[in-house]
Each structure stands twice: as structure tokens, then as C-alpha cells.
Image (cartoon, rainbow, N blue to C red; front, top):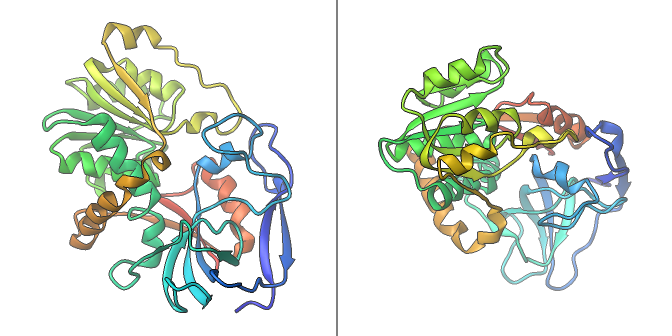
Length: 332
């Protein structure tokens, strides 16, 4: 166990894009569990786009990250000391331990996982929150039917990569949108999408039309801005949009929808969702996702930064789209 506990605190709120200097690294004494608590050593830290929204002091679905406090974040690790009847030393667990090497938990929100069947890190990706987000947005919001065209934006990311594969398993034509030829090649060649369009290309709208010759029935939207506008222009009547994320606005810019008229003309249903509102469905989703992963029907990619010290740099890079698949920090 580390002699000191390294922690990243939120030092300042970003004015626009998040920068590494918005965080401060401190060291504290390792915490000691009291009755009813466990001490967890973090092995992997999850970096996710929602964290950027928490850094702002603005009304949202969750409280803002407090200045001077450990940054919020999902973690996977092991119990190193337990004074809680439901946990014992050596248990592999997933929880919200934040950007630090060690944390105390009273067991609330701490979930035991099987690290022998699936790698521990996968419980922060396709068998964790990103996977459940894709599962819920696809099945419960979009409800795509076999033969329909499903368009997934940020298709090379942790959520989009799962959403597109699930759409194909449901019998849909899965078309991805990603940034750059390398990511598009990964989405088609490694993940099995039917097509992928580079939103950075000058002929993006024409390429999107070619990739969706029968229009679009369902959009799993992670980006917003011009990408969503292009998707709305291809929507079929009575199409559905599951609004999961707005990456286009995470650097501080505005994200207007310019195709509002198309929502009316095509009678499109656009629904935002937050997966933490549906915790009752997580066990069902995780069972299905874990089974698909174990059988090889669901594939995934990770981008891993080493050491807790690398967290801010990896986080800023993720917001710029530098990662492929799930962005993690290997803490120890």
C-alpha cells in the first residue's frame, strides 16, 4: 500500500476548454477504515466526458464538482482492508472513488465484480457505466428495429462503440461518425459497423448521405452541433434521437440545433437521458453486456495512461478526441 495517498483536486473552473492547470496534485496520509468502512486501492481510474460538465458551476443533473475537493470519477480496484461485513480484503470492486490512489467507502455504491471472467478495466467500460449507457439509450430510448439504419456519433468512443455494435446485433444497419480516417477504419474493421463517416472531412455531409442511402431511423447522439445538424438532415419520418452527450460543447462553445424545423417536419422524437436515473436496470444491462463480451460478440478498445500523475493530461486529451475507445488511467 502506498505510504502516501496522491489525489487530484479541482483547483479552478475552466473558462472554456479544460486545461491541466485546472487541477492540483496533493499527497495525504492513507485513510484508515472505521467500523462499517472499507479501504480500496484504486487500480484503474475512468475518465469520462461528463466530468467536464461537473467542473462548471452551473445547474445540471448532478451537483458541480467542488473546488479544492478530489475530482469525481469511477474507479476499479481492490479492497485492502475491511471493517464492513459485506466485503473482505482482496475483493475486486467498482465504485466512485475519484482521482486518487486510495479511498474509503461505507459500501454504498461499491459493487463487487468478477475480475477473473473479464479484465478489471472492462468493468469501467463495456461492462460498466459506458456500456450500460449504450444499452439503455439504444434499447429503451431509441428502440431500433431490424432493418432500420442506426447512426451513432462519437462511434470510436467508449459509449458509441458499444451502441453501434448493439444496433448491429439488433439487426440494424449501423453507421458511425468519428474523427479521422484511423478512427473510421477502427469502427468498421475492428468493431464491425457497416460504414463510418469522418466528420472532419470537407465532404462530410455528402459522405453521410452516401452511407445512409435509405435515410436514418435512429440517432445515438454523443456530439451535438454540426454533427447533429447533419444527422437531422437525413432523418426519416418518425425517427428517434437518443441524446446522450454533447461533446461539441465540452470546450466551452455554444451548441445550437440549427435543424429544429426538421424535428417538426419529420415528427422526430428527441429524448435526452441520464443513465444514473435508471439504476434499477443496471444489473440486467450488465449481465447482457458481460455475456456478449465473454462470447466475443462485443469488442472494445482501451486507451490507458500510466500513473495517477497522468490523469489531467489524459483527460484533456480525451476531450480533444485523442483517445480510441475507453480512456483509463492505470493507477497502480
